[in-house]
Length: 459
Image (cartoon, rainbow, N blue to C red; front, side):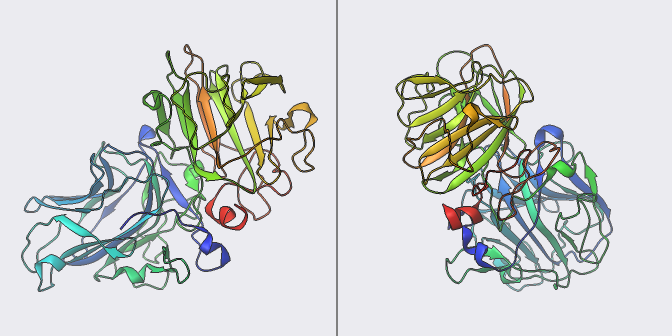
């Protein structure tokens, strides 16, 4: 069983999840609430999540009182549960190492079951996960979960903060539910997808967090009023990147040149380069495309001089230095220090140099092999992607990814990506023809945000 990127089967109809919540460990984001005890033998926890960082210990949930119950992903990318009542540990296969995909988990606790192996079960994407370590617990065991005390989402105490996105986060108090109460396999693609859960019986201590209210991100919509306190999360962290419409982000695990010098944050929508010497640092989008018309924006918050933005084929050798200036026929970029555009060793002046807080626009027409760059609302060389006039280049080919990078050894630029759900405030707000995106500048006619629904329709 593997993870997945939800394709556009959801674009033709079905249940849609509107929002997720983006957690960033660097700002200690979390949700907390004080609880009173519910049913501690029978319960169900369900959530959809998209990871942003691998190889570090990250907590999805912890419940603290006299004992504690912890749901987390280990530094080895293993899904693990620990209950300090008896020091019981459970973990399951497979490893969760896809940062471009949404996962769904259902953790089903029922210590009243007569079979030991059924007293705590994990389902990943609708399928019963293979247990690696299974604690033996007695029948009618009292879990530390659903106790009184403090319930935390996205952290453990003041550590192990989550990097990633959560959606449709649910506790069922008093019932052990199968995964088909939360999702279903799509009849066309066979991919696991969410269903409407609003009609479930949540139990007295249960909750349903849909993250749809920007003014109350911890609101429980189950009807129980078990609301959470929001810690360091703001309306900017409410995302439209969800388990029914997956948005592009930076790819934090792809083997680009000097990946070790890149630091990712904000749900992989922020990348900072600490480039010193040698290879350029380059980050790519999680999604690639060989057809369609696509639009994105990038905001520079520091050291704009060495930044470049463009597209490249997925087979480009990113370990070579000078990606923007050498004879790379499969790479098209604009450079921030001088406003030039470059491809295959050719250089042309196309616009102005970048400054901090500038927004770089990129419009890519794969159907006609054209690309444009804009700066703060104005395209270079009086270009117009909507009409197809005056592109920077007209020789695009192959399966391309959007790339950003840094080629100055004495700079540490931070580049914020807006693939449709930005990690920074927008003063205007523009969407594509399908209603997706929250962009600073108008999206050219016929161009679309890079997400799974648009890719299914146009990509």
